[in-house]
Length: 96
Image 1 (tube, rainbow, N blue to C red):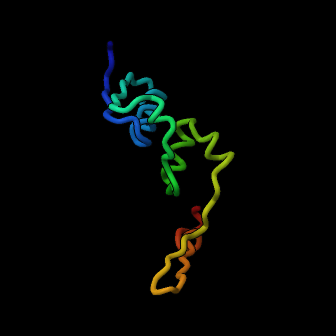
Image 2 (image 1 turned 180 degrees about the vertical axis):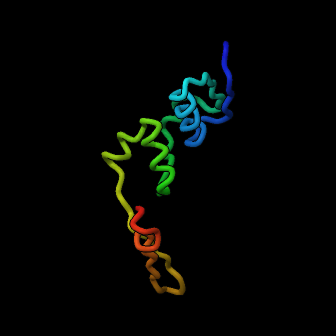
């Protein structure tokens, strides 16, 4: 096997890195201790930051995220039985 990069772990970061390197023409191998069925069957993310979303789009792997993902404009914290909203879109200049 002729490869330039070995990636340890087929989690979200390893798979995204592998795709980005592939798109750049760099040969990689991803090593994972779990079975392919285990890796593909896992729920991987709840909330994604804007930079991660842009990387997924750049890598060409955002189709499902764009089709099914829900856009969050903020989060809410619960402290002493009081809800405290944090309007992320407002605080980040409109980023979601």
